[in-house]
Amino acid sequence: MTALWGAVILSGFYHGINPGMGWPLAVSAGLMQDKRRSIVVALGMLALGHLIAMMAILLPFSLMKQLFLWEKELRYIAGIVVIVMGLYLLINRKHPRFLARVHPTKLTLWSFLAATAHGAGLMLVPIYLGICSVDSADTGHQAAQSLMRGNIINAVKVATIHTLAMTFAGGILAVIFYFWLGLKFLGRTWFNLDIVWASSLVLVGTLGILTARFGH
Image (cartoon, rainbow, N blue to C red):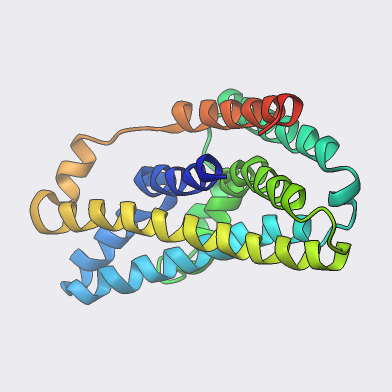
């Protein structure tokens, strides 16, 4: 269980470091408006969009009664879906064009769409299902309704803790670039994590299948 929650936090840090999740937009907002408060507001909007995207993926799983009957099969399917998403992003390197059409002031919407398009929520599904599996094993004699309530709580916890970790990591980078490095430095040293991101999806999906097969 500790390892699974650690994976939730580490994946949040990983998403936060990835420029594709939006922290450069927070730097840009601060520099354009010349206000430190703008960075905080922008990060908050990005965090809200990311949180909604995570909840949109995890909550449907928490409401499935079949989760108790077909837990292992669902973990296999989730792992396969995450792997397929990673392979797709490895083959298709183009960024979704619709993200460029979202107005810069609508950072919450942009963050939601970016997280969805990049499969950020899908990365959490195998981890979340593993957490639910451990909880179900610990409370196996309780009613299905109680287990479902616990799964909903876990979905909220996973999405919230993950988003907080993402915002913390992205916020640190945003502050560093705002106060010391600037967007010009960011443009010269831009690091593209697309291949690493897609590969990590494949890795997480594979680990999800292996843990479902051989235990937690």
